[in-house]
Image (cartoon, rainbow over all chains, first blue to last red; front, side):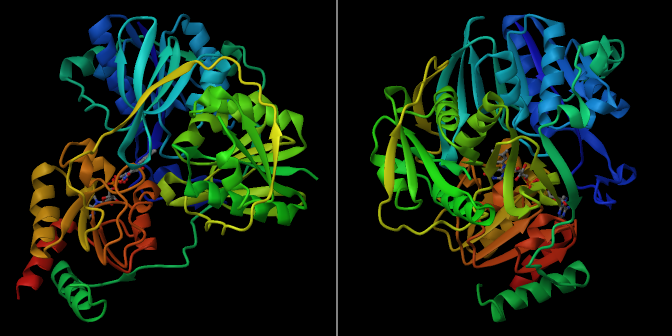
Length: 261
Length: 318
Ligand SMILES: Cc1cc2nc3c(=O)[nH]c(=O)nc-3n(C[C@H](O)[C@H](O)[C@H](O)COP(=O)(O)OP(=O)(O)OC[C@H]3O[C@@H](n4cnc5c(N)ncnc54)[C@H](O)[C@@H]3O)c2cc1C
């Protein structure tokens, strides 16, 4: 099996977010990491490879800093990867990103399975996987919480639904699956894994290398207007003081003001 | 003039609440832009179409045996044929499990721009401006589409449900559904027979910030026991295996509405909040003053839960 995993680097959501000119976040304050959902996707791919043989290929778009997390996936056990490195692609919307990944997958050739995370924690679009399946003209499943590959022709997966329900669906391969958190326990890289990761093949490709002519704003079907810190109509009453003082004041309020304990 | 077209969401003969919210959104958008609001219902008969017509003036009913059950291929092909047959200005889909499964396929197949998870819409200079959450709700962005038609998915609970009126007009439409590449085998329940926290009056819930299974026990479970309530968790905790799936609160877990909900070391992601925003009194303990949970909490303590929780237990003892 040839499995492609799409990996995105995102800010750690506990970072301090400062918006510059309503256009972007100040990266100086941000620690970056692999998108949580993608870690589950990498692990899922590695488990299929262990069972069926084959290779796991990472595709990731972004600036130089994303190499850290591509190598992280290599250290977990992925074989090689493509780094789509072009500011004009990064400036595009999900249509542009999906098109670029599609071209990269064509370069890889003969993929049996493409895995993405359900969404990226930064943009939260939840679109790329489905767009990719449309461009590749193959079936897809989203929010996958269980998958079983019986052979190289078809796959059975559980698609998560509301209220603890799962829909069990079958589709032929190749297919695109967007992976939901919790379907496995992503492994930690081992020290030998980290050493090997440094030497694994990583091809760098631009829009021109991929044969993609419409990138940036020209290739986008949506227009970003601005970003901002949301103004909430409601804010919690923050109880001040050291832990002891605040805890005692809180217990007092719950007893005498809210009357809930 | 064109239609702002809702695609109805239903399962097992039951219309989703999300669809009633979509009807509200579509009417609001139609009014601000001088369009009309309509809904398309895809099914194997027109029972659901009748139901939907109580919420929106015009319903297009696409009936086909292949639409008896939701599939991404079935829905996106049906949507494409309805959009191409009529004067549709844009399509409004729920940002739920089915919606995110097929909305992008509809957008791609009609060449339209898509904006997902919107929670606010304005109309200015002849176009819609959509607001949506980014960075786990710490920030928001505004986005519009550049194409003639648009597709949006709508965040659940961002709009109220439209109230039912009398039945409106239903027009049957041809839907061309060809090849459906996925086969639904069955729908299974994953938390059957497990503990049910949905009726609890007091819940202490823990998130990733509780660090590991032992510390989750020592803080979340201990405080819940002290207060004689139930304990619950965010998805991150359940994924890590620190407690059972039946205790997960949120979109993919339980919906709870206790008198008191205490959230420890969880950020308040929208999918979690979806399951607990009905709580009467919400307490949040989080070391990050910008965590979104503080936007819905009644009381908050900005601090380390490993200091605050023992101090709370002590205060409860005295
Ligand atoms: C389709 C879909 C469905 C989902 N369904 C659900 C669902 O049903 N339920 C659900 O919960 N999630 C759900 N999620 C996941 C959701 O998006 C979040 O990833 C998840 O809720 C995060 O869990 P968390 O708040 O525990 O972790 P995080 O977001 O990582 O937050 C941890 C918090 O702990 C704080 N913290 C850390 N250490 C301390 C300390 N010592 N003291 C105090 N605070 C501390 C941090 O500041 C941070 O705010 C779903 C996601 C998707 C895509």
